[in-house]
View 1 (cartoon, rainbow, N blue to C red):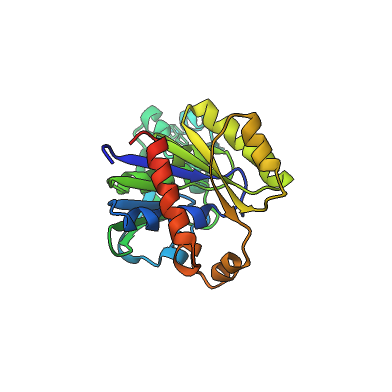
View 2: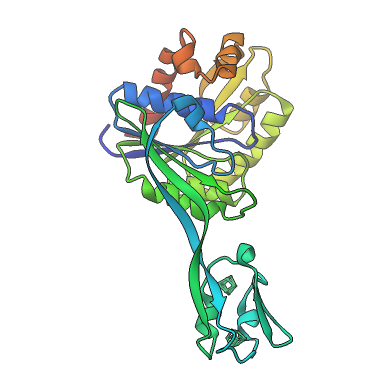
Length: 287
Ligand code: SF4
Ligand code: SF4
C-alpha cells in the first residue's frame, strides 16, 4: 500500500453485522501485514471490544466547558440567556440558572457577560480508551455516558486520539444522523453493510444518499446473503454500486457470534473471505 488509507464501515440500520465486518476487516488487515487501527465510533453502544478483546492501556475523559455564574458579580442583565441557543443558561427574577446537560460548550455566554461574572469548568460526558490487540492492531473506542447527547464531539475525540496507522478502520454507528457524519468525515472509502431484506435495502438507499452527498467513494457488502433473495443485489445493480463481497447466511457464523467470536477467527473459510475483501478495498481505493 503506497499511502495511508482510512475506511469507514457503516450501515443504514442496526443489526446488519457492521461491527462483525469491521472488526474482521481490522484483523484481516493486521494479519496481512498492515499496521492497523480499529476505531469503534459507535460511542452510544460500542461493542467491538467484545470481539477484539483489546488490552486497554490508556483512557482519558472527554468533556466540554460549561458556565459557572458568580452571583455576587452578576447584574442580572440577561444577556447570557439571550445569546444561548440551547436554553442552557437563563436569567429569571434576577437569578441566573444554568443547565449543564443542555450546554454545548460554545463559550458564548461568558464572552457576552459585561460583568465578567461567568467562568467555566469542564463537565465530562464520556471517555476514550486506547489499547492493542496484538500484532499490528491498535484499538480505540469512545464510551458516551448514559443520558448524554454529545456523540459527535466524543467521536471526534476518538478519531483525534488515533494518530493514524497505515490502515484505519472506522466502525460508525448505524443510521445517517450527526454521529455517523462525524465518524465518516474525512475517510477515504466507505463500506456499506446491508442485508437482503426490504428493511435492509430501504435503509441502504438512505445511507447511499448520505455518502453520495458527502462525495465519498463507496461500495456494498451484503451480509446474511441468500442466493434467491435478490433485493440488495438488484438495488446495487440499478444504482451502479459495486458489491465487494456477499457473506452467506451461515448458522456457524450465528453460533460464533453468540459466543462473542468473529467469523474471521471462529469459522472455517472466513479468514480467506475477509483477507480477500481487505485486498479488494485497498485496490478499489486506489492504494
Ligand atoms: S456555553 Fe454556550 S451553550 Fe453553554 S450555556 Fe453558554 S451560551 Fe449556552
Ligand atoms: S450576562 Fe453576566 S451579568 Fe448578565 S445575567 Fe448573565 S451572568 Fe449576569
